[in-house]
Image (cartoon, rainbow, N blue to C red; front, top):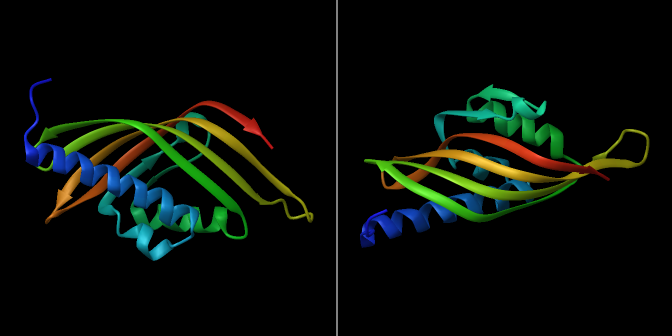
Length: 144
């Protein structure tokens, strides 16, 4: 990899901030703010781990809202590998850990701690970076 310009470094930092906002808005159930982080044509894929595959950020945000309402989630992203791949385009891989605990409908809770990676695409929209898609892969899931 060649030397990065100041603009490249600023773009990478903006993408890191974008992902931090994703985790924060998701865990704090700020659904309207979460929606602003995605391009209108974003796609989401965790079908390889038996979860979901869907098009559109509205569908994803509603899925998250339904799944996490009344529960607790804690998402952490670590050690991103971010590559600027074209004019206003980037990719990233984030090591991740998520803790999810939701009501089980019988007065208790159910959930898991998961470990894996987000494989993401980003696109600049105006002056802002947005998530244009991701695939979630898991290396391990520990039930609660």
